[in-house]
Length: 438
Ligand SMILES: [Zn+2]
Image (cartoon, rainbow, N blue to C red; front, side):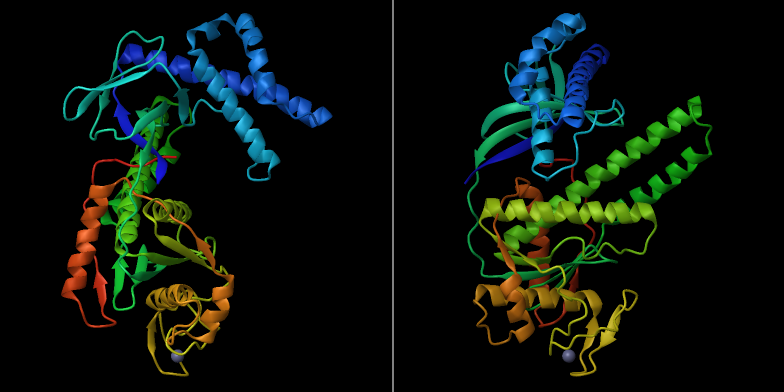
């Protein structure tokens, strides 16, 4: 299938180029906020909904009023207004909150739809040329761009780094069927537990990520002790932002590896719907990180399934995957979150909480694939099958990265063939950032 794919590269602008980019960010933000303020007032006072054509017709007037806007790439300003229009549309559809004003301290973005050039000059280096800037900006280009380039955007993260996003359209070939189904339980102690009908695979949260998170907590504590607004406070704040960004990158990289491996390894994967596990009993930061990770992980699984012609099934959010015995179907309502292991009072099976959940999810997949006729499937799962929504499919551009984990899964599977045995994956080495962004 033909799909949109975004490449992300680090940009290394010099001081002068940084200044230029910051002007672009600032002007796009100014125009966005200016029209948001106007349209918000009209909407709140008179219920008038502004259209893109109105912004577009008013832009030249605004440019006359504020001559400094001439420094900006006019197409970038137009895209800002298209984005404002989209934000409103999403709000009116009930899919998002009211559009928010853009802040200087948040992530900055400028879109450049045309008249740019990307040139790769060596294995890892490239240059970017954009309108109104005479000198080319160096790009750290760790991979080749495949497919047709549609447009680009430049972002600046709160830690002061610049990135180039290249939106392309490319053809993605669906993967060959492997006839394997997986039940994936997103764990509390571990990242995920996968049951494939034979083995249980444990995917641990990578150690490097845990280490980075601990460091972030430490840096935040240091920041809280500094006097607000002081020079040391500014420095500490920058450190927190850097560390935060590091975690975001590391986590995204890890999630890409895992989701790619799953997509390659299985034709059908069953996951729980989101929000059912918003109950981690950890400190606030870890909870936030875990929540974001799961959301992102599900999103990746969904689009990769679609790209690669795989099937993803979301179990009903009220299905008690942890509490239901995967052998006899007994529902243990006494099971609290702190209980990691339990014995089924009916059939006597010893359960590990998360492994049991992944087995139940696997059963749902089986039921779904066989149209509810599989001999091993219990009635509960059959009833559930009615509620299960078949989701469609997607890709993972991180082919080699996925291959890495894929190989690991393959190797481990070969080593452990006894049914019901668990495999723990070694912590995966982190690769340089190469991810697909939205
Ligand atoms: Zn039982």
